[in-house]
Image (tube, rainbow, N blue to C red):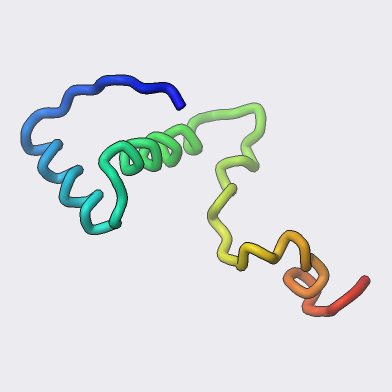
Length: 75
C-alpha cells in the first residue's frame, strides 16, 4: 500500500466522512473504492474489466463453477 496525502474542501470532507461512516469503512477505503469505480469507467485495453465485481455470488462460487453457472454438480 502506498500512503499519500490529499486535500478536501470542508463540505466535501464532511460529506465523505459521513458516507464512510454510513458504509462502516474508513475515509481512505471510501476514496479507494471511489477511485476504483472512476478508473473502471476509463477506456482500457481490457474493457471487460469494467464488469469486475458487478455480479453477485458467493465466495465459494469459483470452486463450484458447475453448480453456480450451470446449476449442476458436475460437467
